[in-house]
Image (cartoon, rainbow, N blue to C red; front, side, top):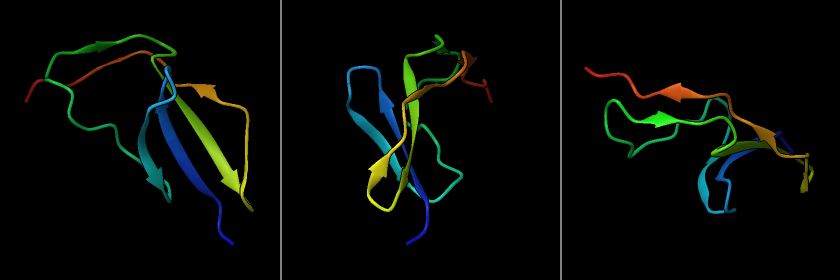
Length: 62
């Protein structure tokens, strides 16, 4: 089984799941996201790693 990943909101809501790389979609341009608003989790053989906070970022303005 291949290693997959999950991105969850800090409240546990799943945002994306699958092979790397994953993307967080649906955020408005210019949105500032704080460190820890989203977490990344590795899934290997059905076991989940400890959630790792995603660093702060701002959604680019096209």
